Length: 173
Image (cartoon, rainbow, N blue to C red; front, top):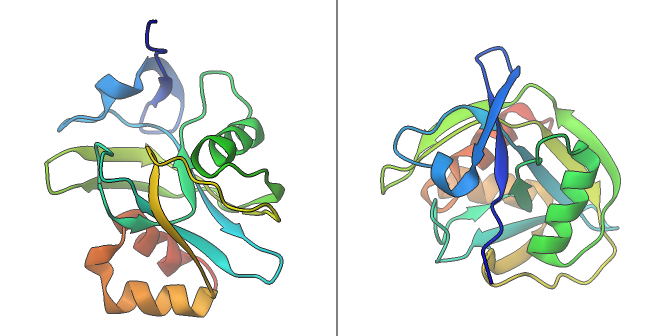
């Protein structure tokens, strides 16, 4: 059985698509700018889901972060990409998808030297499903009030992905 190649969309500095690359090959110490997305998933009571990245993840293993992230495939509609990743990472369906930071962009380097370099719009969505995380993606998860999440990131920023902290700085309280 051959492995499926997952492609990411490469971008120029203005956010225009300029090609594609194998996701496994693009995340290096010199990562090209590419398209991604982040999603903050809420439950019916307004709590937000935070996840701890699996220890086998290539970048930021074991770090707590937003609910899920991903990369739209070439030509893939963003809502389809969000639904696909929600199911792959968390085993859930999503509703009420809404963009909250359409211009979020970041570059971060993890402890191993691997670079994330993404134009990464941030979305919110709602699920009423039971969380059934994929252990290759998520090692732990928790529902927090937005206030408790902000407090945790402020108190222990080293335990969270840098992009989560930067997103929370820009999202309304």
